[in-house]
Image (tube, rainbow, N blue to C red; front, top):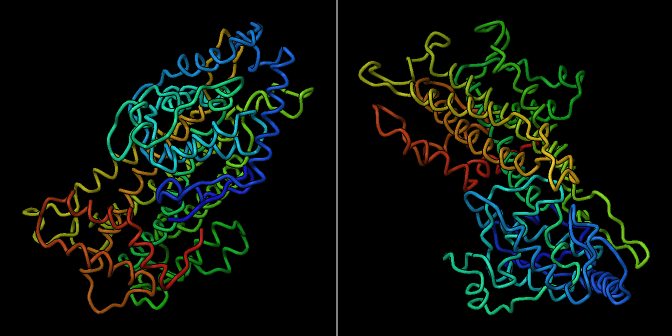
Length: 507
């Protein structure tokens, strides 16, 4: 197992994936520890001097004008966590929870939140020992941070709530005891420091983004296989026409397709069989490329956010504790709405290519890619299922960020809904993955109906992996089993990695 050292400033998406999915250990750097200790000293000076500072010696939200005595500070912080733990719905997966814990720890490591070092170390110990708090998916407005879900993250630290440990859900108190981790008693500012931030939306969005990066590569593989199966025209991918409309994603897609089909004898030239291909083939660089550009924009914004302070108030010095709005999730809300739209389009064009593969009125292949049609339905209903998924995605792709509901007696009167945007993007990506799996299976089926041709350098690798696990469908069988096999090849990265052994795909 590897180790990721965090300092609040250098975390990458790759690091997040290593911790979330591969259980890398997380440690604070020495410099981060110094900054945390320095920030905590300021909080203690404020409390000792009875200064009135929001969130340290006052209530929260609309209760910001209520001054809290020194002796009640601990009760205030505990009550904050208990009262804010009101999430609803299914729990986030352990991968999402691990990502949330990592991102919150990294934000606190910057040293502007006033948490005690030992409290943060407890959170990291939970992460490293696999104590995963049960965090409901629903309940965040995405401004004032992800208050409700992050409060659920904190509960087991107090010996409250529930957590998953060694694959079993149990009380938070029991999980901490079995893992050998001492619970904590929060003091001034700590409860607020743990829950006031954008780490839930960002954690979900980070996992969605990684999924979409893979789907960008997969969509080019799927498009190239379909292009060959339908004996598409190569000319539309020549780089000369893309360099005179130089969107980076468009050029990268054209380069990917040309690399994938290099050496193919399935591919035709303009005027050889037809003058033009339909848009879903001819415009692959323009459509896939636009999604690539969108994803790279989101990657840039996410890289900033995972290394940012999103707390409130922010502690700079004893005389400068500022109540600002860094907890507001709007930068992530817009980004994750954009991400959902971008990946939904990959599904839309894939489903239309699938239709071109199975519809005998649009090609020279057997109807629904099966022998003895009528007795067999072949790939007929796979298109129905794919159409259902892309239609669902059109509903899910409606932006969450255009909505806002005032909260806290209208003190918090504009919110981002960024966590909803992130959750939607992840759901859309899951649907698109299945659509692309369906297109890839259908393209391989279509390829097997043609004889005497050779696949391209990259598409041949993809085809071989599919046929290693999934046979040509001679007659009807339980289709979801076959689709599940193809989806698994995407999930375990076998399909993409096999292609990237011979071609490095760009995104």
